[in-house]
Image (cartoon, rainbow, N blue to C red):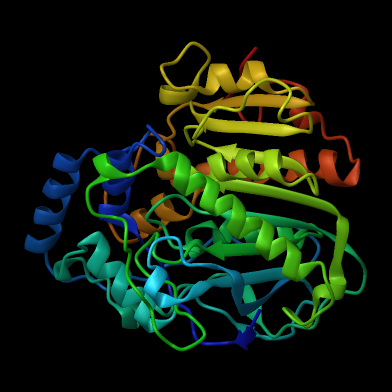
Length: 399
């Protein structure tokens, strides 16, 4: 197994227009907010509008710590890449976000320039939108490269993005968790999105994003579970993968994901007993877990229009099968990307957004995911999980 460390400059993933449509087409989350026709209309309008200058800023984390950031590269010599076997062993790029001392390090943007260019091309973002690799590079993430870590041991949370999404669209959640005392690993699933810059400097595009009708999402989910378990292996055995691995409490591990990343969280819990808690954010289960397969805490957090009790997705089947502490929360007005950075960055770029204010979507996601992991991994009770809150009227408790 080879591991290299990299601090290459990262810039924003505004994924953004084609991303929601891409997710809708794949069926990974059922809940895409923007139908392809609307995306096309938006793109045409943007192309015809006067050129604008995009400036993106993610919300400030609310915890007592700053968020430090490193990018590491891992190679799993035990298996070939599942999508492009000719490329050799499976390679992963992972962003590590950790509790840091305020005022240390340098501001960390979202992506490498190559990742940004690949994403703009993948999402078919029109030139008239004003979104370029150059101005995306100035997106403010509130994470800091090379920041001095806070001393101590912290639970590890691994985050897996939706299909077609680069890992960076979960940065707001990652920085929030780090600010509240978690080490976070944002996993880029190579060949499954618009491009992750690898250790050799190459940024390969998506190899399986062609015809969604031909995709086997159960296989993709199973492969992601292998990715996540491999990352956990490398982060909890010494510090060769990441020099700050001593920060991780290897006995307190959670996994959360958006869309198919949420399905991967459930799949990882089934195959990897080290994972003590999981979160699925607005993703169909691929497949729904069988009874008794998951007996540890699990949170289902989704858009009310698609993931309320009695809906057409397989969340009801999954809920019935969960055997441990569990919560099912449905958010009114949310769309599929509301649980990521995407809607907020779209709004900042001047594009239409869903009924739920994009920043509210991020606030809700941060608050409830943090409260859940606080309970499951730290033993800290939060009244937020007890029932409806007047401060969060959009959040509906199911069952």
